Image (tube, rainbow, N blue to C red; front, top):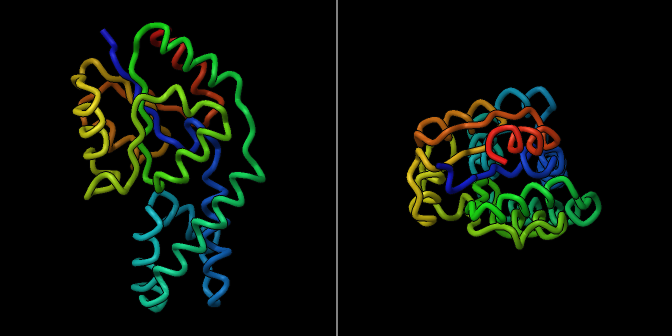
Amino acid sequence: MIKAVLFDMDWVLIDAREWHYEALNKALWLFGFTITRQEHENYYDWLPTHVKLKRLTEEKWLPECLHKFINQMKQQYTVDAIYNNSIVDFSKQVMLKKLKGKKIKIGCCSNAVKNSIEMMLNKAMILNYFDLILSNEDVKESKPSPQIYELAMEKLWVKPEETIIVEDSPHWIEAATKSWAKVIIVNNATEVYSWIFKDIL
């Protein structure tokens, strides 16, 4: 019996991946650095910002002393993108409401920072459906480590066999699979509604 559904954020609940890419590049451009589209897709897309910055220092000699400021500017540009681009997704509202109606616990587990997660969910008008929100600030090891999902199941008092995880990208799928929960794989946020209904609603 399924007792909990855990969602990733980007491309699962909200199509915000491009926002993060553009926000970080906007912050990097202040100091003459950039991540190309090819580099983003092949090496950086699935990494938390602090790991991206560390890699940029190792590979492009980005001064480490700039990390904190660039991270702060990236978060500000992300906030701007959330306010400028967020839309209300009524299909997600219906899906989450039906999950709630079945007494299923709902969690969001993302490599993003918690402020961004909560802001995106709030702008999409679905924040109030979530029993738990975990970010990269809540764990020592970010995805593809399963730690965030293991912590979520612990906090929600559910077992892996009672949990569905909805993920999209290979590294996140790896994290979900390692947690031993059932994994639903989607290609974008528009698929989530149909898959959840197909599997448990």
